[in-house]
Length: 422
Image (tube, rainbow, N blue to C red; front, side, top):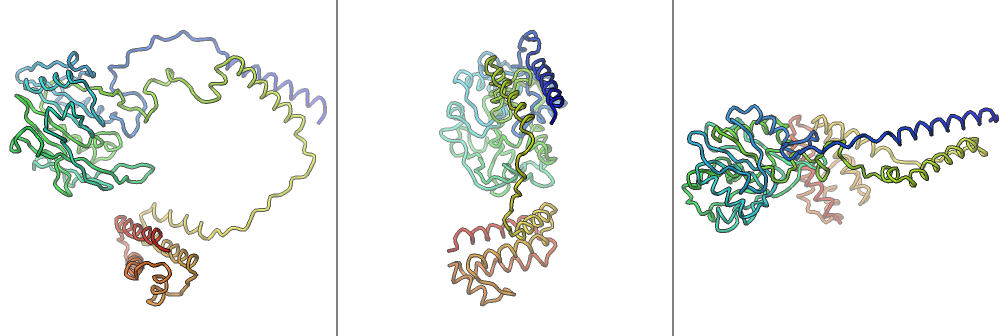
């Protein structure tokens, strides 16, 4: 490389550094007065646990004459009076409730005067539940989904709403709450079951009288979050829940102010977010910033003058790999995403047979009784369990209607084999 070329490259590097300094040291803008966002229901950041879509639905809801947002100090922010012919409706939708006893007193007075309160929570704390029941209000059932519907014929859905909570695209096996009446202060005949989980007919949406008004309680608040409302049947379920409430003035309790937070991220607008990456920390400090830029400049100079290699590149010798299993996995994933289970199952069976061959050195051209006996003897798994797995494989390969649920059951049996085999 000639000296002229090197000088030109260094000159270009200096110009680039000047441009970089220009953007890193901009004129300081005037500080904006931070607006009061306490009355805002949601921000522009929408995530699966927010209430953005529900708020959009309520914006055009004909039963809502007005919407006001109240805060944790309900004794000062909640109007407990009752207007004849137009009751007030209090709304709280969150994972839990953690408000003061005085706020609970105000809420009880609000309902006793003839108003309505709708509370959808996963956890009812003792401060609130002690006003409704002698002890705990809910019990749980477990599963990876819950089926929801309403008891009144006018509100029943065409098909029950099958609700699941996903994490990393997999349905989570979890506990689901339902109400138990035996500890309630109100008589059993006074408590109205509005909605149930249909597998066991357990109540999840109930109506409890309190003075002249009513409490509507729901123990699965996730059905009102964005993740549920994105689905047509989830949106319809929320509409039918709110159809139970009277026309009037609505008070939405911004309990945690997390309407659309992304997990632990701040809910403030982007221009107000504090940047916390390592690079931002370095550039924020004057001396660290100078050292960082000097390091970049030195690295650039080194690259310019040492760009010519002194030795030929030594090629990397890649080890031989068995790509057949990777190919099977890729093809299987393709059929699985296309819901072509009858094609996927062939590759799944080959993967299972290959596992047995690799672990126990048992191979065969056909699945017969002798093969199953040999596998059972070496794996210490019952012959009936192994026979059932291969029967499911044969049935799946012959049926184009092999469902996802059946595939999941087969997968669980195979995973059980992997887990308990010797």
